[in-house]
Length: 118
Image (cartoon, rainbow, N blue to C red; front, side, top):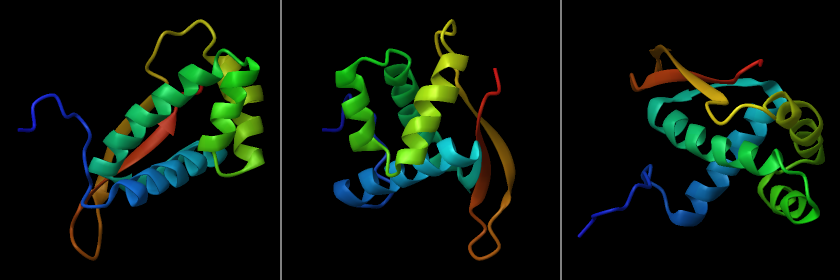
């Protein structure tokens, strides 16, 4: 039975899905906004909210967790020094999803994922 399983599998194996989400998250942090399919955007939003929540409390153990998740040192520094302090007094809703157009190849619906400015 599938009761209580909230993870979208995205048609990928566990390791592929985790690597893809980490890559999407790193790009989102570096660029501030990315365009991806709706389902990936929803999975990324949940993942990004959790990571930003961890970054808001920059103790050593949390920094080590973030280094394991993020792919580049630039993304880590930007998250710790710029993004997390912006949301110090906010309790959630750091990332928004906006519907965009459709992919040219297969017609999949696209969304724009962005980190809020304040």
